[in-house]
Image 1 (tube, rainbow, N blue to C red):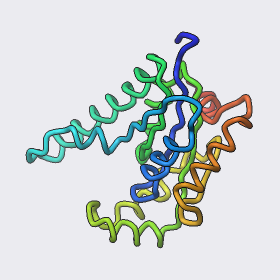
Image 2 (cartoon, rainbow, N blue to C red):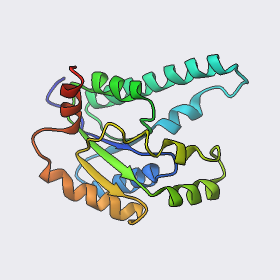
Image 3 (tube, helix red, strand yellow):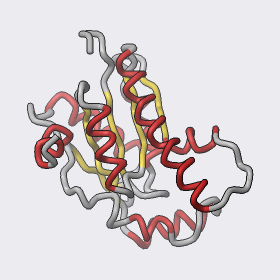
Length: 186
């Protein structure tokens, strides 16, 4: 990794927690350089929609996620700063990100929202399987360590983005990704 590597703000939360909305607001409030929003849903939208057996779909989704993780690293390596939105609902996803993004300083942000609000948002969206956000609620945060957390149920996406921006100059030396790598023996 060269001195020109981009910065990474990594938003993790359930489906319908507001990650994409916060990411769009971050692009507006982070006016110090050019930022890109890279979201896992964007990669899912690029995949063919043909019918697949569950095993084939699961394998395609795993490859999609792995490609997504590597695209984050490629963007940063090329000097681009990125705001990532992801759902780390399976342990391998976080482990893969810890490995692939090891050369980069990652600001790991937990996007939290109470279950009742997640269910309300999911129902209003109508484009997600019913119960997905509630099912993911405990899974996505089980690793238990973030550099910063915001509550998207109590604050608007703009307020969450402003909170994240205010945190950036005050980051501790040790990052959550570094601590999680160390805890996992990576």
